[in-house]
Length: 125
Image (cartoon, rainbow, N blue to C red; front, side, top):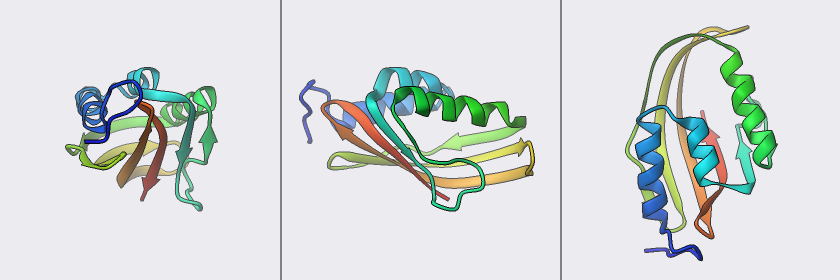
């Protein structure tokens, strides 16, 4: 078990993430689990979202994306899979997005833990 400086293991952080994700509490995940130096990484050629770094920039990235959602048709997130100082979840989202219409976004979300906080999130879709 990877133990962090704050005493929270990757498994404990992943479990808390899972608890909040099942309730669609994404901003609470940011507030509670993200480091101040968080990096949010999307695929290089993503038409939807770009790279953001730092708590305020990552929050704005999320808020800007939420503002583009015209219709929410469903979403689900898998249980986390933990390996060392990382965990990953699968996420399926069915939304109507301004400028894109209705899309199904199926992705893997990978999180890295350092010192008991999430320091990076990377999306593969």
